[in-house]
Image 1: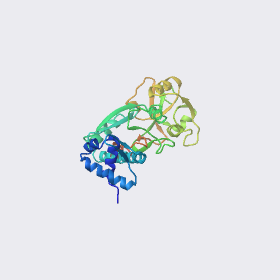
Image 2 (image 1 turned 45 degrees about the vertical axis):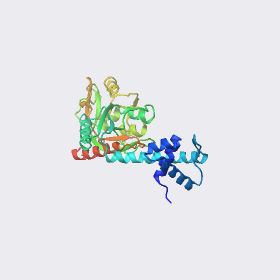
Image 3 (image 1 turned 90 degrees about the horizontal axis):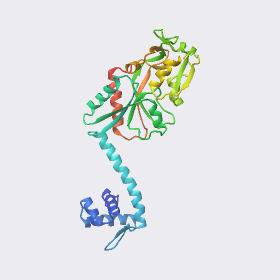
Image 4 (image 1 turned 60 degrees about the vertical axis):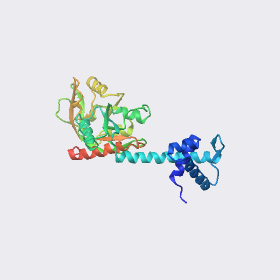
Length: 308
């Protein structure tokens, strides 16, 4: 005969309470019904699961073993059911979304509005953080980083050796170059990536799989770039370095939507493809709202023409 879920629930409840009466109250069953379920389970197991006296109830060794196995399986079943329920009805749920501080200004409000229209009972809590926080988080330096999903510049589709799921692009943004106003290229209307080979280019301290895609070591024509590694956690640090040290920094055409600094210009850059913005989250995440947010963002981006 097949094992019944009610038998498992009765066994786990009695094992937790070590009292048939209290277990019966929790299960909204009669004490005799709980006793009958336990006897049935003991016949299936071929062993006594509880030692019972007029005053005490305790698990036998067989009962202890069965409790450990049943409890772990029951927790997994309950978690799976909760995930399915949340996916079917996310009403009242909260998803915490981080947005890189250098993203185009209109991106965050547009994606949040699209999601809240699709899931009107769900709530988005927004956080702003530099892209570098993502790498601290991956390295375990900030285990309490308070986001479920992060929208950021992501030039690659997969992150090797990182617990990171990467969603499809939600926007493509044209590349640009940041220069000090006294830089030899600063008076041009447009800068070609090939022309940067003669000048020092900022190379932030980022993982190779990411940094190499952001700032290549060589131009498409094969000319090696003169990369200078710098320690810069925030875009404000890069702005200062560029303004003061005749450095070039590969960035995005939208940067000056949010950041302005005297002594710095941002010019269109040709020769490199646009930079994708993607949603990223831990591979281990089981939150249905994370996937829902990513799906809504991708649909909105296609409809808005952001991927042209």
